[in-house]
Amino acid sequence: MTNTEPSVIIIGAGLAGLCTALHLAATHRVVVLAKRGLHEGATAWAQGGIVGVLGTDDSVGAHMRDTQDAGAGLVDEHAARFISERSAAAIEWLVQQGVPFTGDPTGPLGLHLTRESGHGVRRIAHAADATGKAVHEVLLERAAAHPNITLRERVMAVDLVMSHHLGRVEPPRCYGVRALDIASGRVETLAASAVVLATGGVGKVYRYTTNPDTATGDGIAMAWRAGCRVANMEFIQFHPTCLYCPSGHPQERGFLITEALRGEGARLLLPDSTTGNATDGTRFMPTHDARAELAPRDIVARAIDFEMKKHGLDHVLLDATALGESFLKAHFPTIHARCLALGIDIAREPIPVVPAAHYTCGGVVTDLVGRCDVPGLYAVGEAACTGLHGANRLASNSPLECVVLGRSCAEHVAATAPAPCPALPAWDENQVEDADEQVVISHNRDELRLLMWNYVGIVRTTRRLERALRRITLLREEIHDCYASFRVTRDLLELRNLVECAELVVCSGLMRCESRGLHSSRDFPGTLPVSFPTVLSRPARSSPRQDAQARLRNTRIE
Ligand code: FAD
Ligand code: SIN
Image 1 (tube, helix red, strand yellow):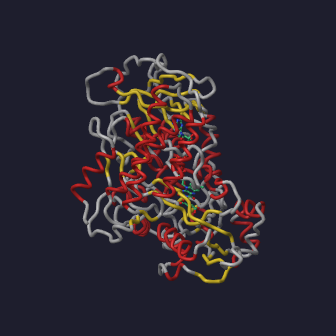
Image 2: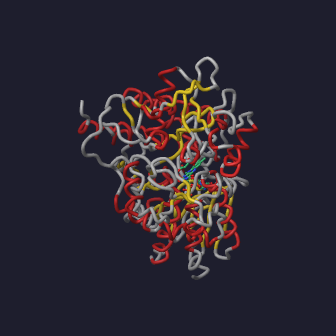
Image 3: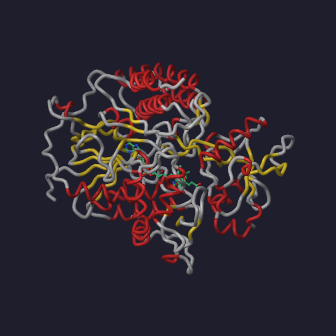
């Protein structure tokens, strides 16, 4: 390592970014960017836990089967095996870093394992119901103390610096990043020996979501603009049980009520249509799936959506009262306290719940060391599509993928000689001015998120997808004009990325002429006997819409 060599730049300080940084820092200087505070991101919000194949009643084969079952035929077997085989080592590494998982002296590695839907056995290590916070705090502390890691918060990656930006006629390659320093408003050009996208998912493209404000699909949009393939974007996972507050802010509607509650025995019930919050006692999941409340998430979310539409309900109820107050307080203290603050005592009354957008199963196409299509560029975590999740992610597989791929990516970067880095041109702001009306950006953002919720939700139709695409195309053009004319701000950049990702979601949905996993279409209710991931590529000057239209002409089964 020499001081003149550019650093590796990791965009994102969540679990995927920090794992990559900590493994790489043994041999490389690493700069980690976070567009908001270092603590903000989905990782810190994760409740349920992280999969570890640890129990004597468990095996890699059993975990792979559950992952494949949930993934509805589209899970990449190699990815599932690679990640599952490394799950025990991943948990051990987290324990070594100091993560305070909930213990059980009789459990493997002294850990208490819980269970969530889609899992045949208990295999989820957790820190009560705030696993993400426990993991993130420890890793962030480690990274902050490491001499080779520089953490830069409130610095937002705008775009990747590619060979064509340098006027080079050569195969595309990533040489660095343009990044907006939010405090000064200046855009810096950062040279990098490698760039790792660890930017999380795109949940914020929906009006109702469990996701934090960071989840605007920046890495996916940047990789797409750089010419990388993006796959399986139609598979947006809706979490079945988020707190429903009738008069609450949309954020309250996104507060997650972990599946682990159902794993421990909580049941889904219909409310009494006259009183709303009292149950009429009807348990509906057994009529939708033999696994009842423990069916995979897509099935439970669709069942709730069905019951809400059928009975004209605002929500259904999750009854955890049978678990008892002391168990609930010990194992679910965060949820207990948050609900109590809103006037719901979960030990005594059922919790009103609704589904909300939760996880992006698709993303930038990578291999199992995080390599994207462009040399010098990697993607890890929720921004990436390794093939592990297929058409629907199995609960608690996401942090596992972050830890395993963070390590394998770091090892690959460390073993690869960097290309010589040319001088990078500075960002040019000559032709732009300050935006006259910020309100246009917030209106467009609200419009986009509402139309995605209304037209690209849990159950879809071709007509609604096409309607969404027409509006998205108009919005994209308007936002592009703003980007070309105005000085960039975080809001504008996020909106630009959101609208691009929305287009990718809708176009992928239009290309899937069947119902599978998280993509449920009224026009194509059947599941095709053979199916493939939806891979969008960006031939020069085409848009995902043209891609989808071209494919539709060939594959639509009327
Ligand atoms: P994140 O943790 O979201 O981190 C993204 C980082 O990228 C942030 O630091 C952000 O600031 C940064 N960033 C984004 N764009 C830019 C940019 N342009 N420039 C600079 N920085 C940028 N999964 C499970 O398997 N088990 C669970 O129990 C679980 N519970 C969950 C509960 C909730 C409420 C939520 C929202 C998700 C949950 N998930 C769970 C999913 C899981 O937490 C995430 O998939 C995972 O943490 C993603 O990690 P990540 O590092 O890829 O992204
Ligand atoms: C939850 O705790 O229900 C979320 C788990 C996950 O997203 O895997």
